[in-house]
Length: 321
Ligand SMILES: Nc1ncnc2c1ncn2[C@@H]1O[C@H](COP(=O)(O)OP(=O)(O)OP(=O)(O)O)[C@@H](O)[C@H]1O
Ligand SMILES: [Mg+2]
Image 1 (spheres, rainbow, N blue to C red):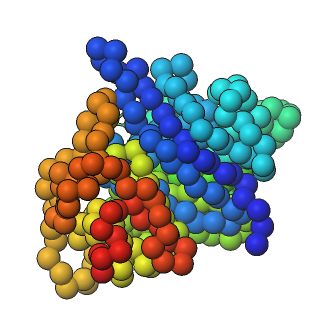
Image 2 (image 1 turned 180 degrees about the horizontal axis):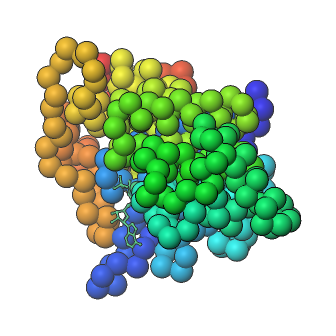
């Protein structure tokens, strides 16, 4: 097996919060990404998915404090701050930002926006840059002539493809796709996932899909990390997460996910995630958990192996079916 392109260890992120109370948005996240991987970061809104990825890319800026370790090809980059990440950003690690398809500049053609993000050494002339932009559009399943069109002339699915083309401009080895199918209909959602899958095959690209939808990630990813309140609560092959979830949050998240043809009632998860601007005592999920014991309010469970390639952070995991 090839070594990891990216190794993230014990990543923490704090934001300056109102009234001087820091928001501890990411609390000790670790994961590896290898060439060709299809990894998912899953969890409900506010659990820290986007913050994790922006911290890895060095894009959080001065409002955040980040600690831990981020290695690209074994090279530690985190202590140098955002600037140390710059040589790896876009060329090694790239991202399709959450909501990117709505952030295209409406008064500029798609081609000129893609040309702008081409690496400087490849921007020889405007004509050559537009030709390269057209090639990138073809790579994501669009005709090259779309370089001359404006965002409003494209469907939502085509705009998202254009955003993926932009993210590929630096020939990255890892592509983070942050909620790339939100706001798209189910048919187009499936097409975007197929595209990411094909790109992973054709380019040997690793894809990290960020989503709140456990059902969706199963269509693309072989491995997932389920996040809750800034931490990983379960991780392992996606198949096992559905058939035998070992953390109650994973089970409830799956039961709250509509799956076509599944003969089961849809249940919502009561309550909400804890505030992250006060220290957490015990398990962060315990106020919403159906199976708690005294020790759940005393110590936060560590992520521990529960089966081959599976880890879960639950005091009761050994007894959870
Ligand atoms: N710039 C910021 N300043 C302060 N707090 C922030 C900032 N950005 C994010 N947060 C907080 O960090 C936590 C994690 O947010 P994040 O956007 O990473 O969640 P997410 O899992 O990507 O959610 P979603 O599914 O809604 O995109 C939230 O509590 C959020 O309010
Ligand atoms: Mg997000």
